[in-house]
Image (tube, rainbow, N blue to C red):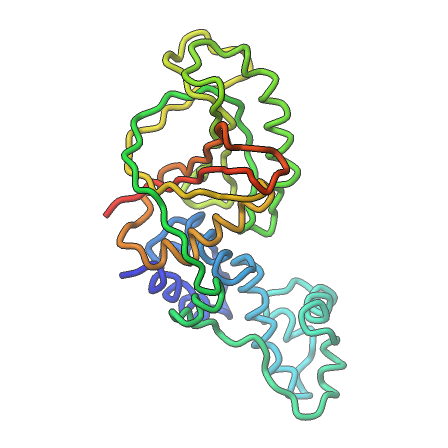
Length: 291
């Protein structure tokens, strides 16, 4: 079964349970993926978070109820999973541009936001048939020392990457000189992984590789990366555009690859080719894979 099939299974599960309480981890579990990886792929494919998609599907389905004038808006709001009529009205207007009452006055009403079908043509449309091939490498085990933080990624409604990760690197870079037994003074890594299986909260470690985990400076943390096969991609362009490359990896390459993600950590590599705020910058982004 391909990743494309798994995402469609998740979408079908949402569709069958729109009237029930939908936990994001249950959507992912039904599809046979971890919550983080399901949300990451879904966001890359659709451009919106999983939680937003579920909310908008419920709003879309509520249009049918609004077309029956005898249905109270409060009852429709509660059925759609909103705690109040006011919250429902705000969300409805944000999505459709009119209030529920105004919608009732529109002649020739029609439903919006149909269920997504993830077809190969849809993928090609999303990515304009961009071609990007990774280098498949056997990554040796690594010992890293760095600074850790928790954050929410672009696949979450709580996305705080721009506030969290630059601040982490700003705090970590001046402390690199404190770390003993560094392997390469010109290379740093960003390690990305979920904190637990069923959560949106992610862990990020800005780190350097070391040959020994002794004498770790106060406030820094050690992490060991197991040896694994990785698909290593080159991101060429401004570092602020890295997420576009990651979206391609998850939405297109991983969809058609014969490999699957091992659920291990993703790794960003910043070496001599990295140039802050430059179109000539190169960052390497690697996914742990298995056949």
